[in-house]
Length: 325
Image (cartoon, rainbow, N blue to C red; front, side, top):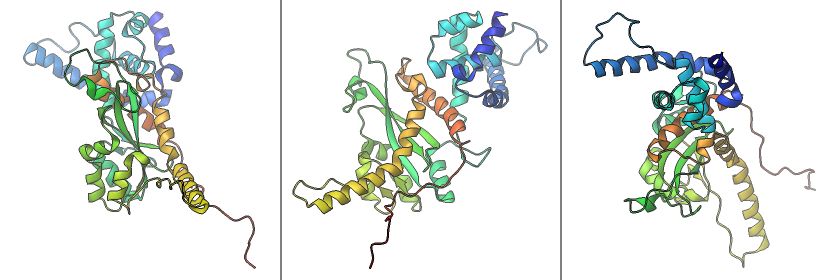
């Protein structure tokens, strides 16, 4: 009775973070991959093929349905493993093992594409190829997540100290389309690395150089990228000097307003990611953050891809009446 109650409670969208329809799709998609990985691990442990009939031997304490549930609830609310173990009446180590098994399967799914059921983007090259083929203008933005402070005297400890937030963080880069639908989120790097440096190390600049038809809107953190690709990357204009005339200041404010209005959708995408507790403040081991981020982002992309495509209203100024005489 308690196990039935735990399944019913954890499958609720408020706890799992996904709809029941999407949960059913995830179960059908990942069950065979999990079973194949399990059989491979058992084969390696015993050093060869099984000698007993299939179905013999000890059964797993948690079936795949329960393992998927505890992983989703943990990703959504970052609940301690011991709490989930109490709900499903198993040992904490069983829950930890279940999350370690299912999380990489979610991370490897890729990102859903709007209006293209079955197609998923998994790499930076996939995103730029999709944007060029479909004529999608990308939106780029960086995001920071606070992580645990490294131990004293550990090499590379300062690499995680963000110059902006003055905290130990991990940075990621988010790509969305003009309607804020997530296309890719990841490219994990330490918090001390500047966005412009990440452009070089992650290969974003190289993709713009290769895919000359791709356009993007960025914030002031990518001014160097906009200077290198002026016909492809649009960034906010520089603020005029104090002695500039009122006309120049007004033009700067209006241009900045249009730019902000066009790229605010990627800020909303980052906010949608932060609805999941681990992406607000990650309390796990830093070496598992990249996998956790990809797993959550793939689930968010499934929901955002379902939003219907609609025409964006223009941000251009329109005269109320004709002033020509």
